Every structure is written in structure tokens, then in C-alpha cells.
Length: 78
Image (cartoon, rainbow, N blue to C red; front, side, top):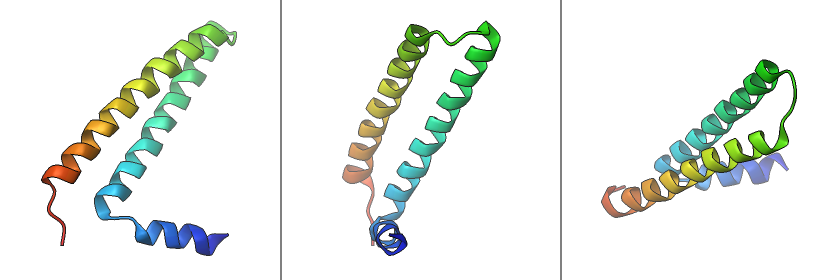
């Protein structure tokens, strides 16, 4: 199992590793927002969390797709 993960990670280009790290970081921020909202409201409101997650991750994914297109078009790798 770890050999497959290691092979996948080593096969990525540097900008792809950066994009993966950014996506994980943004997901952690979303988790923190959900926890904070749940503690502030003292109740888990599914529709509020679903709406926040949908808008937040939709925006992140759209911006990631734009970034990938820019990196593929403009970044010159060795």
C-alpha cells in the first residue's frame, strides 16, 4: 500500500504536488469553519453546513482548475 502511495507521489510534478498540498490545506480550513460554526450555534445545522461546503469547495475547485490551466500553459518544466 505504501509503495503505491510513494510511487504516486514521486510521479507527480512539482506544481502538481503544490496543488495537492493547497487542496488539502483548503479542506482543513473548511473543516475548521464547520467546527467553529457548529460550536457557535451549539447545534449542527445540516443545510447551513451543506451550503457552506458547496460554495466553498465549488469556489476552490473552480480556482484550482483555472490554476492548472495556467500552470500547464505557462509553466516551463525541465
